[in-house]
Image (cartoon, rainbow, N blue to C red; front, top):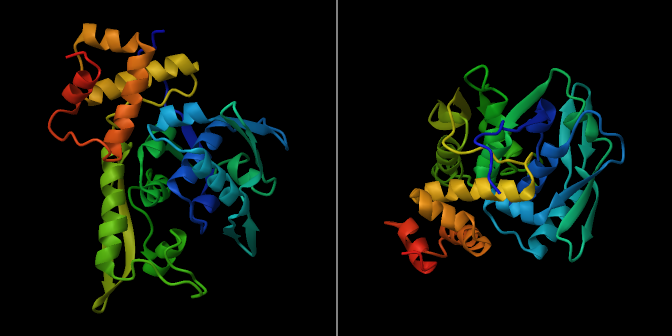
Length: 309
């Protein structure tokens, strides 16, 4: 089934109070949340159930999540608490009210906590928008989080200056109450494992280009700010609005292009074979997770493995 030439990128809109709330999610949890957010509309009523198709989720993200990872992720989303400060109130709220797995069908039915719904749906003028395919493209949970934060300031060009304590708190790297040990306490470790990884992924895969500046007070670094510009992302939109077969073909085309496989007859032969397409998604996933080593010519390796060269 042929895919259309272009689709309109889906934007997720998330209330700024939630963008700056203190929470921590794994990459799997974030992928589930981004997929959930793409399905919300302002017309949704209380108690609306949102269906997430696991196969669709994996095809759109290029990552494979097993049943145990998904189960742990939705359990965490049910129990993890967001801390949202708004004027004189501090709201402690979880994102999900329930998650129902339909075994053998590959679907998850999610229900949003009603206290959370206004922050996700009834947004009015106070929101952050960010592209779904960009959010999915980021493998680091810190990159996903910083991308959300940077999107809040993309129309201004730079974020406010955050104290390092505040910034680490938003990424759940430091417990404001001091009950848990601080992660990446050394500035060099914070740069190497959080800031540099996030900056590189965001600049390579999204519609934003960012850089960060660490600011000193005396001899030590005390605060951070990000500079944010928009750019045209070098990727196709994730086609959630298409039928599953069309979406899979379009994403397969993207993978072939990334691998440098562009010969029309060869592309057509691969896309017309369900076996080749499935093998393509598996190959790309293994390539991304270093289960296959092919630094020089991954496209050639894929063709050889499929007996096409």
